[in-house]
Length: 331
Image (cartoon, rainbow, N blue to C red; front, side, top):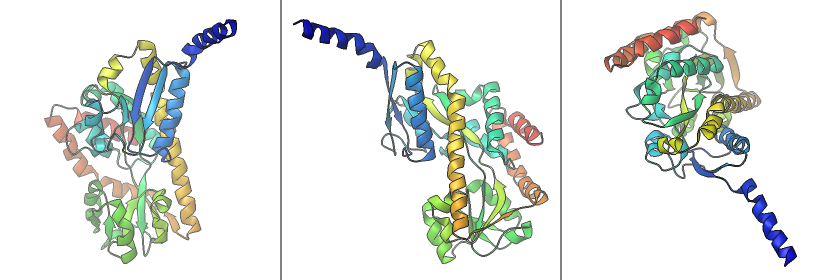
């Protein structure tokens, strides 16, 4: 009896060390092996440790609960307590969050993009107001994409003439300004299109050389930057956030910059691996002259100015934010 009583007492005394006060779910469209998922896994462990075990987070990977396009809506509806979100992929709404990333055209340093963007979010409440109560606890910034080509490099803008290039919608206008045709198609269909010569190239990051096997079907990688800007990427449901005590909220907020930077670091690891794989496969890399990069970047200006004016018409600080981003670009 004495041994039994002692054992029960020992178990009860140990209970606070493992019984969490806040059991939260986290949903992501990515797997844990993806750089974004790997950053999330480290962040989850970090939050649990810094809370002294008061917070326990159960992850659901690979679109189990949430999609990338409708992440904000799904999180707001409570499909999970926390989630990876990407308002830049939404079909409509979230106008500042969705459209401002395109204003970073010409930027080549993603860490600088992230710093400028996070300052803008701090200064303009509209970014968070658009998310309908979702509390942001992490941001993403894309590493620049470049031009991958089958037959030859881009060294001058004249080299773009006549090429058909798989492109995001945002890049079609600038490509057209220099005589290229931008073609939209899913990335999953781009490999066979390159292989068969349906398209001459694709705008993609280094990591796609390996992750999408593009190094097998392109011969050249021309470093003509296409910036991807920054956007809120992890959030907590508003009601769940309101139910957390201030000290737990502070732990999440204190890790916002850490998660954002760790995501970038792991994305850069994937970029380096992709470039190394391209070298192994014989892909030829070339830097594009700064004056050529500058001239190409300016082709983005007219469409982005129209975007800013449209945001102004909605009562949002489009032109003001654009002015800040372009001023920071020159510093």
